[in-house]
Amino acid sequence: MTTTWSTMREVQPVATRMLQNSIVKDRIAHAYLFHGPKGTGKQKASLLFAMRYFCEQADKSYSEPCYECSSCKRIQTGNHPDVHFIEPDGQSIKKDQIEYLQKEFTYTGLESNQKVYVLHQAEKMTTNAANRLLKFLEEPSRQTVAILLTENTGSVLNTILSRCQRIQFHPLKSEDMYEQFVGEGIPESTAKICAALNIGLDEAKELSQDSWFAEARRIVIQLIDKVMNPKEEGYLFLHQVWLNHFQERHQQELGIDLLLLWYQDLISSHLNREDMVVLTDQLDRLQQYQYTISLSDAKTCVYELLQTKRKLAYNVHNTLAMEHLVLQLQR
Image 1 (spheres, rainbow, N blue to C red):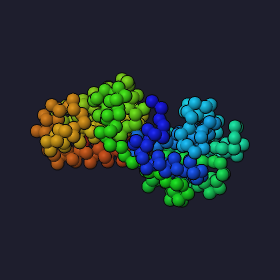
Image 2: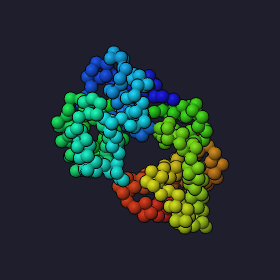
Image 3: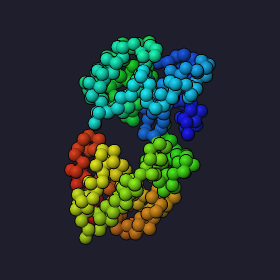
Image 4: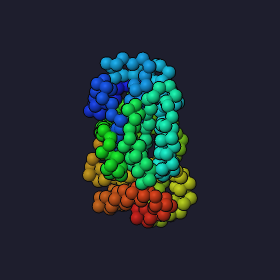
């Protein structure tokens, strides 16, 4: 399903209205900061904005691009020569990536003088990269538009924030996301998980068809059983199974998120709020483990999981972080 400003307005009315007004009134800023949680539509909005900026058939009094011209189609596929996308190289956006971008922008546009660059995960810029970008923002070209995307404005330099028009993308209601996912044919159990984790529609579709994700869910439950049973070797299972499956950083983070869901569900079960349980296929196991782990201990486990997420964000080695976690979860 093609994303339009009309469909964006249903989930992000304020952000969409601000962007549409800047287009229709020809008050496009030289730099925008789209900020908000994952899965709230920041990337889709940046593509829509770029499409409208380059659209060859757009009505000047109308904010929607035509979606059919050569420019619109190439931007949708990431192949427009004057639209540049920058993503972290490994764990960060580096100075040489910004320098390369600046070099590219010294050339005349291949098809016009207009240029757009979209910086994903702007909070992951190194200090040198951020300072280099700042110089770029301080000398804006009239027809160059920067769009920075971030989930964490607190990790972006204040001097960069002050040079951007900030557009906030609010968290979506999980109920609305769940209905949207089910409507797109995603199985209910996967839809519940993706909605609870604020995962976007495209990623949710991929996960629903990914055998790795199905295996990940199974391994999470296996680890729960290991740490809940003092006779089981949770530490051994971690090294033999978990670490082999959750290898990439995004996989490691997803594994922690799935564990968090389970313990949060355990808390809901303790409070007799089964209506809030996400992993509904685990109700019997949740009720069983209420007698093994107290409400207070379940809350402590959630704290330990959040601490592990924080460690991973600060590049603590995954194996060390997970070894410590398993020791804390072990009953």
